[in-house]
Length: 313
Image (cartoon, rainbow, N blue to C red; front, side, top):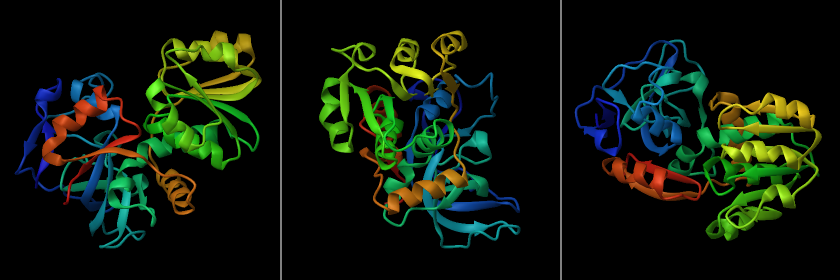
C-alpha cells in the first residue's frame, strides 16, 4: 500500500511516500480501515521532528498521521461493534495503538473510533477527531460550560478554536475570542460575540469576570488570561501546564489538557454535526503525494480550521 513514512526525524525533507508499505495486520480487538481521508495536526509535526522521541521512542519507518475517515475492510474476531463496509472516523495514531493514518489502510483500536457523522463527507469527518475531541473534553468535561456563562477562547480561527466557538454557542454561552486581523470576519460567522484582535488589542484590558478561558495558544497568553477570570472560574490550556501559584492567587481552577480521541467524544461530535450545531472548516485539501506541501501549509500558512489529505480519490 501507499503510505507517508519517515526513516529519520527532521523537517519536511524527511517525508517519504512508500509505494510498497505493508498493509497492517490486526489483532482480535482491532479494525482495519480503508482510509478515505486524513488530516494534519500539530502533533504529527512533533512526531516528524522528533520532539516526542524521549517521551515515546518509536522504531523507523514510522507511518505518520492520526485523524482519519474511511471504510471498515476487516474486523477482529472479538469486535462486534463494527462490520465490513461501515463508514467510520477516529484516530489511528501510532502512540494510541494505531498504525498511522497517512496511508491507504490503517489499523485502529475500537476505543479510538466511531461511526462517522451522517451529515459530513469523508474529508470533513477526517478533519474532526482530534480538534473536536479536544473542544468537547475542555468545554463539556473540564469547564462544564453552562447556558449564559462567558468564555474566552484563544486562537478562535485555528483547528481546535473554531470548533470550540461553535460548541460554546451550541451550549448557550457568550463567546469572546482572540484572533489576528485577517480572521475576524471568519470567527464572526462562527458566532463569536466579541472579537479581540490580538495584534492590536490587549484582551486582559477589555474582558472581565469571565467564567472560563480555553487557551489553544500558550506562552504568555496563558498567564495573562488569569486576569480575565472571575474567582471560581476555570482555565483549560492545550499548551503546557498553567501556573499553579497564579491559579491560587486568582482563586481559579487551571488545567493543562492533553489531546486524546476516544469513542465517547467521537459519538458526541457526530451528534453535534448531524444536528447542525458544528461544522468543521477545511481550509485546504491536498493529496497524499502532496504531503510536504500540506505540512508546510499547516505549520506556516495559518490555516483557518484544518488541512486535509485526500487518500482515495
